[in-house]
Amino acid sequence: MPLLPDTLAAGPVQLLRWHEDQLDDLMVAIGLSFTELQRWMPWADSMPSAAAELAVLMSGSAAFDADREWQYLIHETSSGDLVGGAGLHRRLGPTALEVGYWIRSDRTGRGYATAAAGALTNAAFAYVAGVDTVEIHTDAANLASAAIPPKLGFTLAREEPRSPQTRGGTGAFLIWELERSMSPVLVPSGLWSLNGA
Ligand SMILES: CC(C)(COP(=O)(O)OP(=O)(O)OC[C@H]1O[C@@H](n2cnc3c(N)ncnc32)[C@H](O)[C@@H]1OP(=O)(O)O)[C@@H](O)C(=O)NCCC(=O)NCCS
Image (cartoon, rainbow, N blue to C red; front, side, top):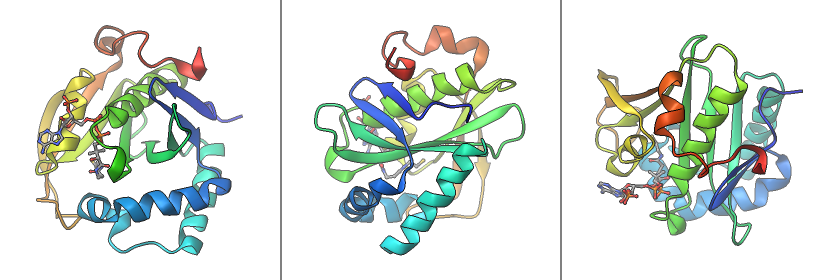
């Protein structure tokens, strides 16, 4: 059994773990959002083929089962439409997890990324033992993304120079952190319940 549940309820959206059945809807969402994704997401430098994306979904699903990382697709609660993706990544050592997210371009500005990131933050602290900190890394030029962590109580820990990874990126990364001890206070309770509870 993986540490994280297959679904996470997050108010206006619901997170469902990656599954190959979602390939067609995912390709539509990526196609609708490609201009924005290409600016900010390293994996979207060129439009992925359906075959490549299927392989990504399958390896991500295996990684979920092995607790290496936990990737979800975001569905709008009201319509069921696939409206983005979000995940928890183990690339910061044993005591921290990183949250990443993207939202379909025709559904931005509705709080969906904030809701998904909040649910994943709660899940990180609830389900993964030993995690003290959740981080969100945003390019300094990505103003919409950088607006999200402070809404969830994350604080700006530092700025880190990196080589630019995307077409829109400056390479100056803002590292946002939320510590476990702060999360019950700072993540509004009741907004993002776990497992639909
Ligand atoms: C960044 C992204 C995830 C935002 O998704 P979203 O669902 O629109 O996000 P939310 O609605 O939860 O919050 C966005 C916030 O950014 C604000 N915002 C949007 N554009 C902005 C801008 N140009 N300057 C400052 N703030 C901006 C919004 O007003 C909102 O804040 P508010 O709720 O206080 O009004 C989405 O645009 C996206 O997928 N972009 C491409 C991929 C990407 O950049 N992923 C993140 C990589 S770190």
